[in-house]
Image 1 (cartoon, rainbow, N blue to C red):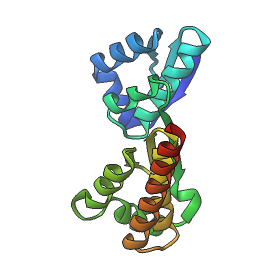
Image 2 (image 1 turned 30 degrees about the vertical axis):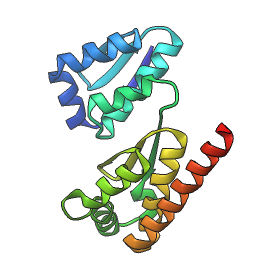
Image 3 (image 1 turned 30 degrees about the horizontal axis):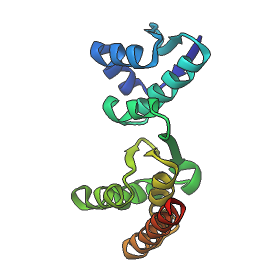
Length: 174
């Protein structure tokens, strides 16, 4: 049995959304239980528990359950950057989160559009779901913003990583 702790407000959503719990149980082939202390327990085979834990953890990091469920498929991965650990102060974390999201969500949408990775900015973290290359491209842009680079530089670096990945894929194909 695996136990997973996620933020209280995400736990409350999971408690209320019976369909989300049923979906996780069905696609991961396991049972999901939520105890009174707010801990999610997963009961199944070691592999099903591993997959369910990843899906629930991604949900806890702010992803919609339909995005988090992508982790069931081979080739999709989860990655997260702890901004508090990287930056230290709450003020810097808040400023960087705003830069990653952008006005009206424009920056986040652009990074997701170019890289094809899904991004969640929640709490003090920025999390990613996608293929290894997709996550690498998105993290390139986000890390540029974290280290003080401009949006233009972040986009250029991400686009260069994207082109490199496309070339790698096409050269391996032929």
